[in-house]
Image (cartoon, rainbow, N blue to C red):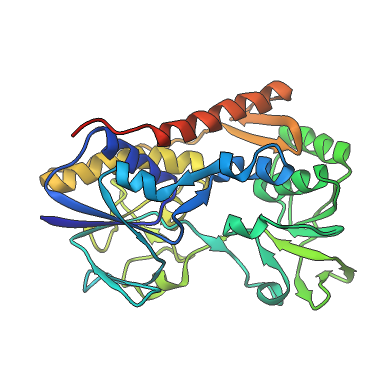
Length: 348
């Protein structure tokens, strides 16, 4: 019987496990490894921070999802991968061998800026944001995640300053985002990168410096350090290079999806969900010794940016819209996703 390990419980593996729950696979033993038995759903995180949802409403029961998907659940963290030996080393000291491996371990926050690792709080894992409470907060990183978080915290009454190396959005969408930030009186500083953080904490940007009660680091994604010693072929940033079937270009028994994979798509949940659909089909092919199916990337996806209050901005390609109705639309999408993951499995 083939041993197949699913490392990480990101969006792609959530799709895989839901697929297995409704159409079980025979002839293989699946094991899911994830650091948490329950995890906050990223799409609803700004709503949790703003107070629109209780944490329990936005939590995925990873252990239960694994059970429904006929996978053994191991609550542990991957700390090393030996692709040649086909083994994973876990934080507990345990070693897992595999015949096939699927990686959906996400990414970490890039803390390479001087002082960031010591004087700032990374926004990943999301559980770091559970008890954030301060009078004046700086957010380093002006991407969609940093802007959503800034507006959620400002809605709760905190003073928020956002340092952004450049504007993330352009055209009409940028105008919509700027209006939303101004309405909430978020101190948004495009063109001002947080160069380093000193004790205090104090943020330095060029020749300027400012003290805050808390600095949240929402910089770009960085690969997990253990990938560098795995033996897998990686891209220039350190993410797993995959072919058109989401298979490692150097080790065909390894697949990767989501943030940890170099697919050419943006590192966002909506793309990971799409990759998960192909990944589920290809894991079935692995068990049946059939040819894998190619993943079809897309250059457009719906992005909905929440704006602190129950108000949101939607964008896809050149189209955009905003309003309370957009927030309720996103609320429906997010709740439907969680309900999908909670559906009981069919009888085997």
